[in-house]
Image: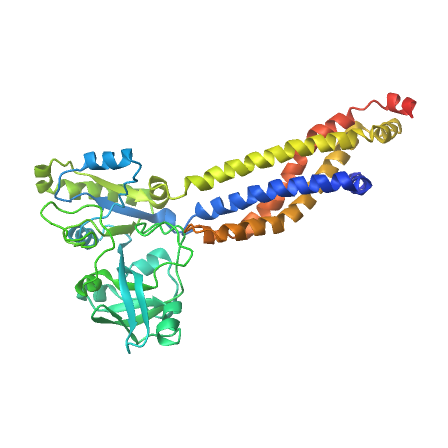
Length: 447
């Protein structure tokens, strides 16, 4: 019976080609608009490190020896200026948290900017963002090594000038992806390459948001031990606040010893570990007796990746708004398709009446027309695919940092056709129900 109704539905589509084409085009336009915006939102709100991010937490304590500046922050907010607090900490606090070894793994993270120069001085990558971190970063964040190794905790402690670079930078500076044993000059210090990694750029860039949450051009291409980087004269890119005794000569004059410019990420695998580490943070900051002289209460926070992204409003509001607008457009298209299908189905009331008089039950008539609606919308989904790809290509031409990430992945490809089938079922329910209520006697008498 299902096969018979399917054949009738396919025949019905061919019987009225003009109205079928109109239904297909209307559905295709609505689906393409909706799926284009949904794909972008899907990419922007995706888990940056599936399987890992739920175990990663940002540890923060406030030990800056300065009075709280809520008044200036409120004034900036009132004037529409967003005040970012990236939960950075000072160098001494970062060292103390790492020395305590209260987490499974732990890593200091800070973005720094420097010229990257090959050891022979022939090739330079000017003003590149490098990541200053510790040896646990690679296993914690799932960075894939291609050649060599990552540096060791002993090299961290000894402040050995070593680096890991990605294969793209290795090719650019040395003409080969395997650059293990070569050296990169940062400022006036040569750093020996101990490992080459695959290009690594989780989106959003949750562990260092100071330079933006998204980047279509990739992430940092060079990783360096943070202590060795500080010894070489590199400075963190930004800070949340500095001690009152420290006077910055320029906005880029960030001293990690006096400014909250480093972030500490820890890996905690169980709820008990999370609770224990949270207590440890609060106990640590409570011991900072000199904070009382600045009118500050002990503050600490342990924030998971998902909460951290929400706290910083990483997903742009415009992306969500566009989904709502596109969804409204799809709804309008669906209303129009319902009207078209109702007129189309009722136009063949005579045929339906004869079929009913010959013994076809209402549910068979209803199923036939729902299948016809679903087939039409499925064809609309096929047409919507190239239109969606066109819409994503247009998005990638925009100047936003995140626009270049708009690409259709297998999940959204499947979602397109699932949505097309759902739309077909929804728009076909009312027209199919109305035509299934046709009285066979009146139609046969009219014929």
